[in-house]
Image (tube, rainbow over the protein chains, first blue to last red):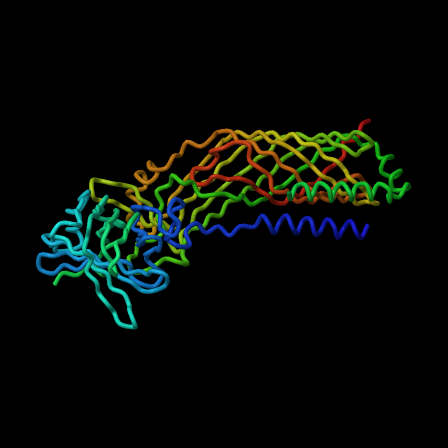
Amino acid sequence: MKKNIILLTITFAVIFCSCSKDYNLYRSIFVQDPDNPGLPKYSEWGYNTFGAYIDRKTFTSNYYDLPAKVIVRQDTMNIIFLGEIGYKPVSMKFSFIGYSPSNYKALSILNEKSIDLKSDDCIVTITEKINDKDTTITFNILEGEFIFNKVQNLYVDNESTQSILSGYFDFKTEYKQEPISISKGRFDVGIGDDNFFNY
Amino acid sequence: MRYLLLFFSLLICTLNMHSQENSEDNKKETTKKNRFFIGIEAFTGVVESDLKENLDIRQNIEPSYYNYYSGLYTVSSMYGISIKPEYRFANNRLGIISGIKYTRSNSNIYGDPHFYFRYRTDGTDTYYAKIDRFAEHYDYIGIPVELRYFAFQYKYIALFIRIGVDFNFKVNSKIDVEFTKESMSNVKDEVLDKIDLNTNSFYSSFYHSVGLRFMKDNGFHINGEIVMPSPFITQDNFAFIDPYMYYGFKISVLMPIKKN
C-alpha cells in the first residue's frame, strides 16, 4: 500500500511538472531566422534588429546598443548599424549622397527604393576596434545593393511615433586586402526623434 | 511517455491492491446493490495554448529599448458544472455516466504592460493601437459520455479512473478589447474586424482523470479527481489562441437512487 502511494505521487508529480508552461511569447525581439542561423528573421514590425553574414561570421545587433541611427548632414543621409561581430563592437555606415530627409517622417521617400552600392553616390564604411583603437575602413565595393523594402510611418494611438525601415543589403568588397562577401543582410529598425539627426 | 508511465503505475497499483484487498471490505461494498446514482459535478481547469500566429500583434516598438523582459502572456481556463446520472455494473466496479453539462471557456491576452495591435495599413502609414487586454469567453451546453473504473477500494475510500468524451454546443460568446487609452475605443470595430471571430460552434474533448471516492454509510459519494492533461478534439474554439490541452480538478457529489 505504502509503495503504491509513493509510486502514484511520483507519477503525478512528473506529469504536472512537465506540463507547466510559462507562456511568454516574445522575450526578445530577436527572432532567429531558421534558414540563416545567427541572423534575425526578416520582419517589418520594427523589431530593432539587423544582421548579415560577413563571410561566415555574423554581424548583428545586440541587446545593449541602439541598433540604428540616421544622421543627415547637408545632402547626405547616413544610416549607421551598431552591433557586434563575435562580441566585438562594430558599426557599419551606409552613406547615401543626394538624400536629405528633414525629419524621420520624410524617410517614407525611401519606400521600395533600391540603391546600387557600387555607384559613386554611396560610401560604406566599417568601424571596429583594432589594437584598442577605433579604426574606420572605407569599403571598396565590388558589387552590391541596399534595398528599402518597406518604409512605414507608424502611428500609435493615432500619434506619429517613428518610421520603420525594413529591407535587405548584400555586397562584395575588399576588406583587409581580401575580397569578402557581406550577404543575407536584413534590417528592421525604428527611427524616431531619438535616433534621427539632421544638422 | 507520461501517459505510459501513468498507465503502468496505475496497473501495478491495481494489481497489488487487488491482492491486498480485505475480503470483508469487498463484501461490504458488493452488498450495496445501488446501481443508479445521480450526481452533481463541478470542474475547473487550465487551458494550455499557443497564441494564434495570424494575429497582427507586436510586442514593443520603442527604438531605444531592446525589449528583453516584457512580453505577452495568455491566461486561459475552463470551468463548468454538470448533472450526471451513473449506472454501475460489474460488481460496482464499472460505471457508465452521461448527463448534461454547462462549460465556460475563456482566454485573455495581456501585455506587459500593454501590447501593440496593427489595425490599419494605408500606403506607407501603419496604425497600431496600444492594448491592455484581449478577452474572449464562450458558454457551451454539452453531453458527456464517460466510463469510470474503480481500481481498488479500501473501506470507505476507493481509487477510480475515468475516461470520457464530451460534445458541446456553443450557446453564447463574447469578445472584448481593453485599450490602454480610452479614446481609442472608437477603433474597436476596426480592431475586431482584423481578427477572425468565426470560432467553431461545436467543441469536443477527450479527457481522463484519476480520483478518490469517499463514501458515507447512507450511500452518498463525494469524489475529488485530477483531470490529466487532455486534448481538444475540435479546432478553432478560440479567436486568439490555439489550445492543445487542458487539465484541472473536479469535485462531485453522488446520491444513490434506490429501487423500490
